Each structure stands twice: as structure tokens, then as C-alpha cells.
Image (tube, each protein chain N blue to C red):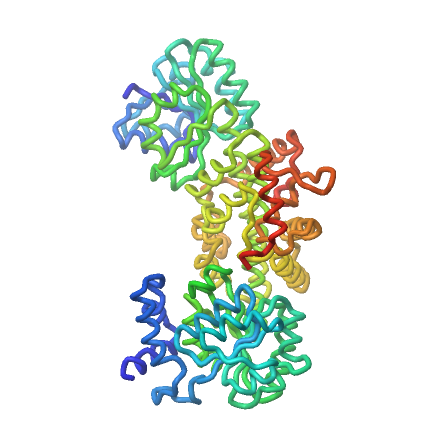
Length: 373
Length: 262
């Protein structure tokens, strides 16, 4: 318990790095995993006398078990937390139930039975529905409880969910993340939070299980805005990378060499190094669905318009994602935007990076779309 | 190694030459504005009064000019490289130009019996100073192999990409992506600021994630301060975007983002 108290005090400080460092490195070894588990089962939400305010969250709810929600909830469970789950399609809950999660049949019941409830939904509409809809989470919220919405939405949506939640006397935190499937699995997400500071402090140890860093950005709307700005830059970068790959191949260069050249220079980024090789093969295993990237660009353009800022690059990139969506690539990884630049031939099939083999491989990828989701 | 000629003492040429001198290479340098050679002379270089004089003296001559027009001028004008080019001599043009300009120079050099290598670089002022350039060579393989000791000092990695034109094209594609990225980054910085966010926080967030890259890390802070000391002059970036789009047009490749960035 001594160790647990020390950890709790560290976690509640602005400088949470020492705590995160213990939890997060080296995360993928057996030793650190069991170390994490032993530390977490003692610290993770038991009441501690070292905290000046309300009790730490003992019971955690998790609404939305998609590409992101499922590994995030799993990390909480593996860390020894008491987790109750809900998902629109119940079967998605089964893997978590077999890991020890409890199940309730509506967001309202989950919220009512938990101290802090997280939600991770695909878009503004789902986020509103789960929070404020029929048997929504708000119905189960009350003073002493907290709602942490990890979905990526626009500021207005977040504000309206916040009002509804806070009208029950509960606390609200928007907390969209930077990072996709693998960082979610590895507990390496970056949380961009805003809203009730005390809920941020309460939730911090939980964020530290699921992530590698967290930011508190002030008023509701700031977290949403930061996430949209980051993903606007990312969407534009992926679109221009796609243009470059295609151009290189068209002018007789090896696109794999382009990927290598880029990795050596000033514009080298993990995204290019990870996605480049599969894009060259016309493969787009889904880590971040293209439809969500387009949604984020659309919301970012809305944000830009609200402050009267022209964003021609983002606008051009957004159009490409829309074309990709119209070609049926919504559930592929967002790197599939490169297909939008390829010329559509008769029959609606686009030209790939020339070989017959690649075309047939891509066809079978499309049929079994989202196998990795 | 034999004495090397170096034409063009701009931001890049000067840094590259100093680097070669520091590593014990003998250099004869030339610049249109001769005074820019002074510092090189202080560090042991000799001056050539024009490109032809430099080529006459040196087995290998490197050119580092700002654009196609300058590269062509240095090659073709009176007292230019071609006047003294001949068998046994090599010309390595490290300027960033379009493939057509490079081909033109290549043909002229080889018709005089000389060897030609195009070798544009990826990297700006600091990588040039630190010998961390990425060199994208194409053309005469034998010349590439002979000049490699100099490349190894100038850069951290060299690529030989085949026939003349391939180096130029690779460079243009890289710089096109870079130009679009810089524009996207600028849009993001401005939007963050206008939305009431802290720009430095945006930089911190970007640096932690999948789109972290050295360019954002290096340029971000000064962009926030609105100070832009030139490592890569904007006019050259715009030149590269124009050349890249022309390449796209020639090959019927749609590039809406690059077009918006230009």
C-alpha cells in the first residue's frame, strides 16, 4: 500500500512522467507487464487516504468497444481495474467479459453502476446518442460521478454533451486521443483533455494506463480543437505523401526508394515509415478508418470556417478522402486515400502499382475489408 | 583524393565546401560574387576566376547553383564549365533542377568526352554544415564511385538511382511533399492560434505522435515567433513546387494538394 500511495501522489501531479515511466517502459516485456499489473492492482482505483478530495474511481464504465475502445478497456482490465462494458453490438463485449469485465445492457445502466464512465464512439452523432439519447449515459449520472468522452467530435457537440452531463450534477471531461490501433493496444495514446479539472485529476491514473502522455487544455472545446488540428495536419500529410508516391512511380522511380529517401531526411515521420511500404503494395490494413479521417477533416474545416481561416490544403485533401469514400474505401486504413488519385478504369477498378498480382491481392483485401478491425 | 573544384558559394555550397576542407580535401572554389569565397580561402581553398579555370585545374568539379538558369549558365556560358571539359574530367551537378535541364547539361558534358553525374541533395543548411545530407545521384556510375569519398563527407547517405533525370525527379518529389507538409503545418499552427489554443502545446503534441518529424521540430518554434532565418529560401521551395507540378502534368498525374500548396 505504501507503494500505491506514492504512485497516487505522483500521478496527481502535473508532472506525471515518473509514474508514466514506471508503467510504460519497457511496456512490451513480460517483466514490465507483471510489474504493471502488480502495481496497478494495488493502486488502480482503491480509495487512498493520500488524496484530499473524493474517493478515487473504484468502478469504471466503458462505452464503445470498436478499434480503439476494445484495447483501451482491455488495458484497464489487465491493470486490475473493475470495468463494466457496453457496446451497441453486444458480441464485441464478449472478449472483454471473458477477461473479467462486467456487462450492462445500456449506457444508462453502466453509468449508474460506475464512478467514472469512459466513452469511445465513432463520430459526433454516436457520441450524442450514447450520452444523451434513450437510456443514454446521462440518465445514470449523478453528483460524485464522472463522464470522460474519448471520442473525437467538434467543440459544439462536446459542449452540448457537457451541459447535459453536468446538469445531473456529475463532472465532464472531453479527452480525445492522438494515436490509433497499435498505440491503443500498447497503452501509448496521447490524451488531449479539457473540462472539469478535478475529473482530470481523478482520471489521470486511468489515462496513464491507457496512454503515454496527457494534456489538460482548459475549457471544454479545447481538447476537441487540438485533436482536430492535429488530424487536419495528418490528413493533409497523408494526401501529399500519396501524391508523391504516385508521382514517383509514374516518372519511373521506385516508390520504395522514395520511402527510404524520405526516412533519411527532414520529413521522416513514423507515419510515413509505417504506412509507406504497405501503400506501395496497395495494401491498407485498417489502423485508422478512412471514413474517420474524412470526418475529422470535415470537422476541422468547420472549425477553420468558424474562425474565418482559409485552409486550402486541408480542403484539397478532404476532397481526396471524399473521392476515396465514394470508391468504397471507407473502412480501409486512411492511407487508402492514395487510391483516389489513381485513374479509374472501365468497371470501376483503379490501376494499381502496375502488377497483375497486386491488383488481385487488392481485390481480395477489399472483399475481406476490415478483417483486422 | 584529387583536387576538387566547387562552383557556387551560396547557403549550401559554402557549408559543403567548408565541410570538405575540414576533412582534408583540396578545393578550388568559384562564385559569381567572388567575395563570398573569402572565408573558404582563409580555410585553405584556392580561387578560380571563372568556372572554366576551375575545371581546367581539377579532375572533378562540383556545381551547387540555385536554379536551372544558373546551372545552365555556369555550364554553357563563356568561361563556363564546357569550355574546359574533356576526357578524364568529371562534372557533378548538385543543384536542384528539372530532369530536362540535367539532361541538357549531361549531353553537353559527355559530348566533350567528360563524365556527368547529377546529384541533388535532400537537406538544407544545417545538414550541409554537419555533413548529414542525403545525396540523390544518377548518371555515370563510374563517376559516382570515384566521388563517393567526397559524398561520404558531405552526407549521411547516398543513393545511386540510375539514368540521368532520376536524381532530379526524386529530389523534386521529396521537395513537393515537403512543401505541402509545410503548408499543412502552417494551416494547423494558424488554426490552433485562432482557436485559442497554445501553439507550443500543439508542437509538443505533434512531437509525441505518428507525424512527428525533424522539420516540424526545427521550424515550429521559430514559426511561432514569426522569425524565419533562411535555411531553405522560400523562393527555392516555390521553384521546386512549380517544377514538381510540371512533372506531374507531363505524366498526367493529378496532384490537387501540391497545387493548393503552390
